[in-house]
Every structure is written in C-alpha cells, then in structure tokens.
Image (cartoon, rainbow, N blue to C red; front, side, top):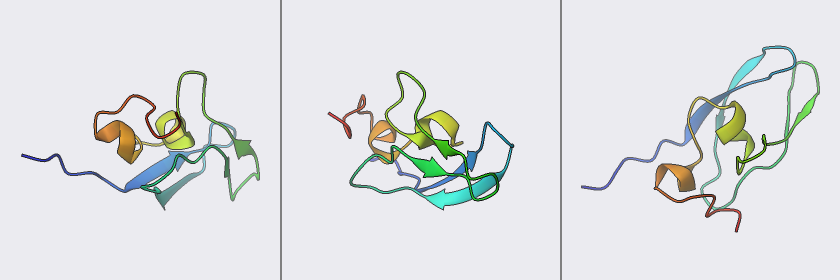
Length: 73
C-alpha cells in the first residue's frame, strides 16, 4: 500500500510566530521562505533539506516518501 503524500504544510515563523498554510513543491526543495508578516527570510536548519522540514508541521514530499534529503542531492 502506497503512503499518501501530504502537500499542505503550515509554516511557523520562528521570528514572529506567524503561521501560514502553504502548498509544498513536489519536484524540488524550497530553500528560502519569506514570512509575509515580518519579512524575515527563513532558511533550513542544519541537517534539514528545506524550510518545510525545519518550520512546517508536515515534512516535504521526498522525506515523506522515505527519502533522506533526496530532493537536494
């Protein structure tokens, strides 16, 4: 049985706490994300492949599929 891949993730800005639901790309990692509230540009934390893995409530699609940073290598 194939695991369902979720494409929606809510990003929480670590600077101001603003939250927004976003649709994740399926073909690439998103390395930068600008908070629409405080305009801080977020980058992944060390060891994470994208902003969704660092600040989202759902990991990016390649990680959900069982890959290990496969979208960025």
